[in-house]
Length: 254
Length: 265
Image (tube, rainbow over all chains, first blue to last red):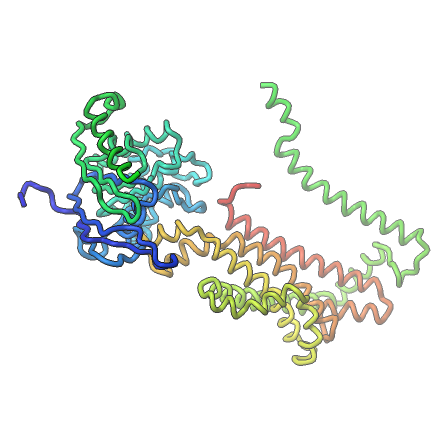
């Protein structure tokens, strides 16, 4: 392996997940194997029920793997930043208090935690809403708070499970630009599940396409489009070709 | 902006003034009707004393010190019943929410508690534990126990699963999940159970006293009835109502403070 390559953030080997509660055990995922170098932005695409969310939940330690191995760069207790499809904010906490939750759980002194959270508030552009309650936020703002919360404790990996799936189309596209900017500012490794080919092409360095259940990897495609990626990029032949490749891979088993 | 102008008559300060004035008028009308009935209804004072007579009896009972003493006894029973019922209900509710087996074990008792009024147990408890305050605390405690238990359980079950997953992805300990998530998330439902319990505990203590006691407002009601001192019955009843209102108000205030984050209705 070349020394020029960045170190691996994540290595997944023969990971397989079966849900025990379904009658005969629902084989949701795998076996899948892949590696993600640090600071890479990887999107996972696939039809519904291809185990994409299952993969994220397993990586976050919410599901026990039935077989296979997951290794993070930091061997013990990797820090996870998870953004769900819904913002999942605590309605009794203000924006700032929601963002500093991960730091509070780590036992960081209150003042320092507030200070760090305030930096994140700036990063996601919510400076005048620090003390607002979630009920006063729009969907896009709530999702920015969720993103800030996922970043505040400087996680080893950012796991995004269709984070913009519940937003309207215009807000969603604005959030792509925001996320690109934040990803570049914080230099994070990202694994993001999405349904949208455009979303993947706007954001990712690399796209993994999963098959229908049980999810297996069908395509591992690098996205060499230049950054920053603008709206006009949509109409370039390179974009069209990649989109076509992804679509074909997703629809292969129909 | 014509539309906003049309809405001005319904502005907040006027609504608030109305919310204060209307109950006041309600009480005033009630008192006037009562006074009229007592005065011109041809009823003797031991059937229906007038508000003025009840007021005079209140002042006398207050001056004798007997009202304060009996109120103190009942209030003590109510508070001890409330504390014991709420603690037991909360702890068992928490455990039942966590362990399905315990919930199944408790299910018959919960169903029975919905079907029969707990106060029906008061005579038994007085037979077993005597006429002192202990049997009253038990009645009050039991009557509070069930709604608090059920609401604690319901509240904890309603904790959004995605939030639990968020906490777990952040490697939160069970204690952290309890403190930062389960308690605040279950609080609204828990507090409405407590509100119910606060008024029920007064009922429990008084029913216990009516069955057999040597002190307390329920005892005072029995005493007044036996001596045809109906004004005293009224005095004790109103004091009880006041006590229940104060308790309800205290929980309401607690609710307003702790649940300030909730959407206003």
